[in-house]
Image 1: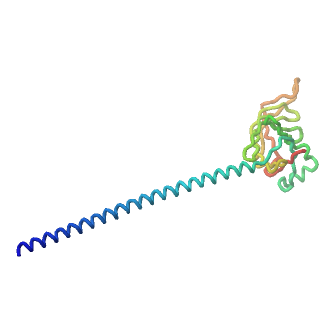
Image 2: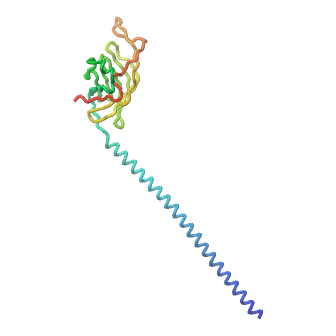
Image 3: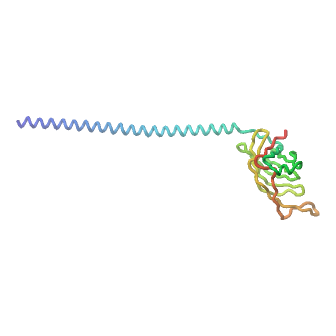
Length: 211
């Protein structure tokens, strides 16, 4: 009887060992596939991120191409002011016939220089650059009817509407000049200064190419 009991215990032990091995193997499989699934999930997330970044890059490149393709041709020629009563207000009505369009012109030259005539013998000059359909005019000099050329500072920006029309989008209210006086050798600059208005050059005023 003792021998038979000993055999039964050994068999039960073997069965327990087998069960433990099966459970251990099952746990290993579950852990392995769970780890692989997590790795695949991370790789998929990284792949989605890379695809989104690529799509954004392509979209930005397309936007840049559209912007380039929408660039309006700019003609380097003379432009004549188009007075606007709404923008200039009552002061324009008071000025009456003193304001003439042919006295207010802008000349853009091939060497990236410009000259803005503002009537009554006054004009400003400088250099201009073009970027994204905007003409930026950097003021460097001014000339008056009774004044020699002198240095000034300022900037006027124009939006290119078409190949024959531009519009002022940024302009200061005035610029500073030195007054001049008549001497034996002609008109000379003094140390006294004065603020000169750009009016009727204001934001929104348009110029048309003089073809």
